[in-house]
Length: 87
Image (cartoon, rainbow, N blue to C red; front, side, top):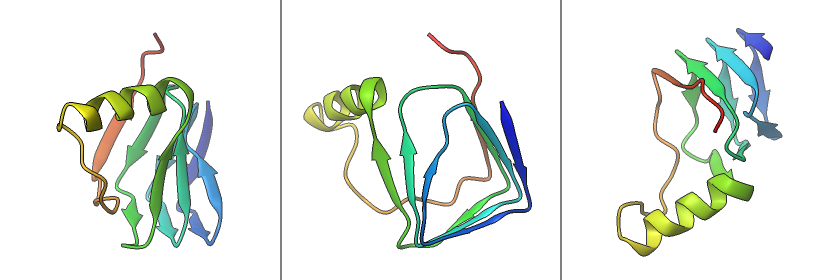
């Protein structure tokens, strides 16, 4: 996995699969997730940062929306999250 420490991402598309992000900031970005392992620790996201799902993650998000579990909204602040097991 690739590791990013204390990076600032601005006006860009960032794929989080198979990456570790520590103390990073995301400003006006599109964060893309396909379902692979990742880790996000003490990162910040501007309110206009968007989250987009692809592949398996997109199908899971669509199911959650259909069931009323997930609503479309801005990306929240995530202090420490990870998905370290690939299915």
